[in-house]
Each structure stands twice: as structure tokens, then as C-alpha cells.
Amino acid sequence: MNALESSRIAVVALRANPGRSALTMLGVIIGVAAVILLVSIGEGARAYIEKELTGIGTNLLAIQPGKTSTAGGFHPPAAGSVHKLTYEDAKAIKRRAYAVSDAVPVVLGSGKVKFENLSRDTIIIGTAPEFPRVRNLFVEIGDFVTQADVDTKSKVVVLGRTVYRELFGDRPALGARVTIADAKFRVVGIMQAKGMTLGFDIDDIVFIPATAAMELYDTDALHEILAAAGRAEETDLAIRQIKEVLMKRHAGKEDFTIITQRAMMSTMDTILTILTGVLGGIAGISLVVGGIGIMNIMLVSVKERTREIGIRKAVGARRIDILQQFLFEAVILSLIGGIIGIVVGGGIAYSIPLFYSAIPTRVSLWSVTLAFFFSVAVGVFFGVEPARRAARLDPIEALRYE
Amino acid sequence: MPTLIEMEGVSKVYRTGQVDVAALAGITLSVETGEYMAIMGASGSGKSTLMNVIGFLDRPTDGVYRFAGREVENLSDDDLAAIRGRRIGFVFQTFQLLPRATALENVELPLVYQSVSRAERRAHAMDILTQVGLADRMFHTPMELSGGQQQRVAIARALVTRPLLLLADEPTGNLDSRSGAEIMALIDRLHAEGLTILVVTHDAAVAGHARRRIVLRDGQIVEDTRERVGESVNR
Ligand SMILES: Nc1ncnc2c1ncn2[C@@H]1O[C@H](COP(=O)(O)OP(=O)(O)OP(=O)(O)O)[C@@H](O)[C@H]1O
Ligand SMILES: [Mg+2]
Image (cartoon, rainbow over all chains, first blue to last red; front, side):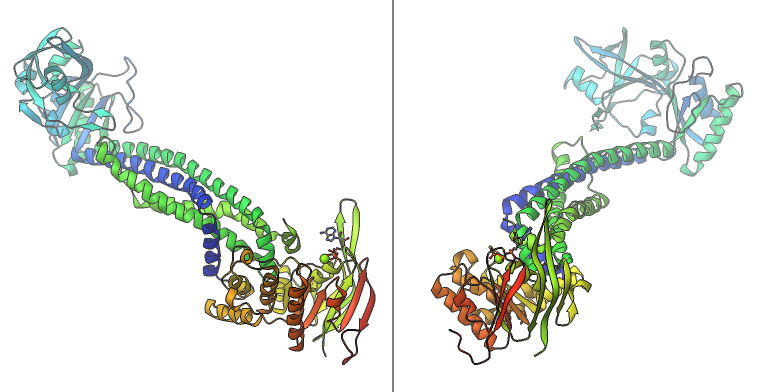
């Protein structure tokens, strides 16, 4: 008997019990849809971050204090053992490393920003005029921190969109004085909105001159120096020059780490690939549960149809014929369930960004292919045992079965 | 006439718990092509067991069984299934029709397992159903048919593969006397056309149709009588 014949018999049997078939399929549908959906969220996050990181240029370098073994990870330096990175370091890099076009000091802190009776806890970045250029940010109203501001430790602040909205609503803010840690700062600019990403509000931020920030936090240490090579091909040269300049300034010790954009991307990529795998794996468990549902119903079905099996054997069906018939039933259930699951999961994945722009999704061909073959494999795996039981039945006993 | 069935000391022992039940205890039997034989005996004497063994549904525990010259012991389960499908038509006491399938689909079933094309097996099944007088009931399911009609569907299914041997276990057991007589007339006609027929029955009138009669008791043949050709059927 050929496969076409077996599948016809299987379809007839499945249609004889439409409710049961549909419920059995539902298990697979949910499993496959969950796989597609969760993987698409993981993939979406990965695609988004790749795009963002690519947007700020592959020639970007971050110099952080302390020597770390693996590129990309950040470990706070052990106290006393290393030199801090200072504003002078940043200036020296810019002046002497000619392959470096920008070297921007970054002082990172957090605190309350107050205006009149309103206040907001936010991230405070002390930096220099080149920061927006390096990080691909734009000022919407007014100006960013200028070199003169940095040189004179001016108490000026540029507000991120969210901070502006929270403190000022729609009122004009330029020239207004806000309080940051008991000091008055004059608002000189408002940043363009960047939006929410993966739950992080990147507009919830304010910028002040690096020198003012160091005074505010009473420190001369930078959190990092952002540098950009003049041209992407000169990134390696820029790294060598930065090392040279800094080691000369740090008594010959390499007590800093230079992280390249490439390393940041690959770290992010690794994290998100693992995340996607974990999400897919969790969803895969529900698909396995769906498979157990198939096995369960097939075992019941074989039991119920013992007599039918006896009749088929009595009129000449071989073991393989019976095996095929029941295996096909299981596989057709999982196959149709898989296809519906892909459509449902893919549909939800596509529509999520329409309602929640903060959750980017991407339905990738590999996840669809994988889910499809996995669902078929589940059908085969969980269908084999019931089908073997059916095929092994003794014809006489099967005919006698009530 | 060539010998179709040959049995030498065939026994069948069922083990139920501690006790062994010998449903067949040393059957030696030879049936030629074209014979029409009735198998009689008390309930539990082993008639159905003998039919099952002859029809390849069951294997003997001991002894030699040759069908058309081939020894069963040397055949695999799938070989037995193939012979069952092609060479033997089985009519069961309890019909054993697929309840959800139509008469036509039931009759087609043996051909499904012989890779006969859909069109061909449909045409063939229709032809056979017409021969047994069910041309107007082909698309009814067994539930929509009377006992006699179901029995005729079962006979049509047994005949659709053009077997060498027809095995009928109590073919009239569940039927009223008129339906029973119709069925026996049909079987007689098949015999006249040259088919080898074995009928299990309790009913002497049914056995009277056959030309040979064996009686079983406790799994052994205790009587084997033949009519000479031309002798009257109703003695
Ligand atoms: N599967 C089985 N397991 C155990 N014993 C069995 C089995 N099948 C048949 N027997 C026993 O074998 C003997 C013969 O049974 P069989 O069905 O052949 O009798 P029968 O002559 O057809 O009887 P009836 O006229 O009632 O149909 C009986 O004693 C029965 O109990
Ligand atoms: Mg019986």
C-alpha cells in the first residue's frame, strides 16, 4: 500500500472525530506558535540592537579603566592597583593620537533633577561637545554643551526628552534653571526623542559639561572615554596609538581596556542568541507537551479501533500497512497543527510591533523551518509507539475485542 | 483434483493461566480444490479455531499445515497476510465489517492492500456487490443494512479478491431462515462456479448443502463423511 493510500485512510479516520482531532492539534498549535513568537521576539531584539550599534559607526571605541581579560565585558578596577582615566587623558588622546578623530570624556552618574516643585531621578552624563556626533544623537532645541562650557565648568544642562516633558510639560525650558544635587544649572538645549527600546527609555537622561560633573561628584575619574577613529580602516591604528599615549601617561602600565564596536556587537549578539535559544527552548517544551497529547490520543484511538485493525489484518493488511496508517494520523495531526501554529505565531509576532512599538519582532525563516520540522518530528516520535502497538496486534485477538 | 489444504497432526494449544486448553488436538485433514465441506461439532469443539488456522489468521502450535503446497511454518506474518489477502476469503460469524464505511468501501478493503488502483477496485467491488444482489445498497453503512444484507456484504468482501478458498464461519447463524436460505443459495452457486468452500455450522440443514462433512469433538475429527457425486442432498 502506498503513502497516498495510507494518508487517505488517516484523513478519513481523523475526520470521523473532528472535535478530538482539533483539540489534539491545539496542543501542537500552541507549542509551535509559542516557539515562533518567542524566537521572533528574541530575534527582533537582536536585529534592533545590531541596527542601533551599526548606526553609531564601526569606528567607535570605548576606553575603560582597568584591564579586563575578555573584550566587551566590564569589570570595575580593583582599587589602588590602577590609574584612573582622567579628563587630561582624553585631551591627550585627542591631541597626540592622530588616527583618532574624537575622544570624548564620559562621567556617568545619577541623581535628582528638580524644577520648581517637580523632580525626576535620571541619568546624568558629564561629557564634551562631540558626544552627540559620536553616539548619533541630535539636539532639537538650543545647543549641546560647548567646549567653552567644558573649559569653564559652566553649570549648563541639556535635557533628554523625557526629563524635559516631566519637568516642563510643554512649557519653554531654554534659559530655565534646574537644580541638580543642590547646584543650579541653566537649560541650554533639549535632545531629539529616541524612544523606548526593550524597556529602556533612552530619553530619560541629562547632559552637563564633564568638568561640571566631576566637580558635582567630587572626582577626577572618568567612567570611560569614547573615541572614534577618523576612518573605519584606521581603527586598529587608532587602538595602537591610544595605547601608546595612555601607557606613557600611566607609567608604562596598560591599566585600561579598549573595547571596539565590533566586540560590543559580538557580545550583545552572543547574549541575545543565548536569550533567543532559551526562549525557544522553553516554548519547545510546550511543543513536546503537545506531542504527548498526540501520543495519548493515538493510544486511545488504537485501543478503540482494535477491531478495525483486526478486520484490516484479516483481509490482508501487513504490519507496515497498519503502522503507516496510524503513524500518518499522528504526523498529519502534528503537520497541520504545525502549519496553523506557524500562521498563528507569525501573525501575532507581526502584529505585536503594531501595538507595542517597544517590542520589536522578527519572524525569521530559520525559526519557521525549525518549528515546522520539529512539529513533524514530534508527530513521528510520539506517533511511532501507538502505531507499533497497532501493527503488532494479533489479528484473532483484535477481531474478538469488544 | 489437486490438494489445496493438507494438515498433518495439527494442534493448537491456548495457555490460559496455569491450564493449557487444546483447541485442536492432532488434526489430519486433506481438502482438494473444488470441495464443498461442512465442519460441525458441539460448541467449544474447535471449529472456529480450525477455520482460523486454515485461513492463516492463527498459526498451529504443532503439526504441519500446507496450503497450495506451501508450508505455513516457513512463512512470515506478512507472507500470511499476503496469502490471506489474495487467496482466501473469510466470512465471519459476526460479519466484521467496518461500521463507518459504506458497503462499497468495505468490499473494496482487501483490494486496498493489494495496491489495486481506486477506479479498478471500485468497479470490481460494484460488480461483486451487484452479483450478491446489493446493487441498490452500495452506499449504505452496515448499520443501515439488515443482518442478511450485512452477511452478503461480508461474502462480497470475501469474494472480491477472487480467492481459491472461501471460509464461512456460521454464515447463517445470525439470520432468519429466509435470509439463511438466500445466503446458502449464494454459496451453492459459488461452489458450482468452482470455488473451494468450507462452512462451519451447527445446522444440519446448512451442512446438507455440502458434499463432505467433518465432525469435531474436543479438537479432533471424529467423523468424516463424503457424498458420492449425484447422490441427493436431502437424505
Ligand atoms: N484465545 C483463546 N484463549 C484460550 N482458549 C481459547 C481461545 N480461543 C478458543 N479457546 C478455547 O478453544 C476451544 C475451541 O474454541 P473454538 O472457538 O474453536 O470453538 P467452536 O467449536 O468454534 O465453538 P462455537 O461453536 O461455540 O463457536 C474452546 O474450549 C475455547 O475455550
Ligand atoms: Mg466458533
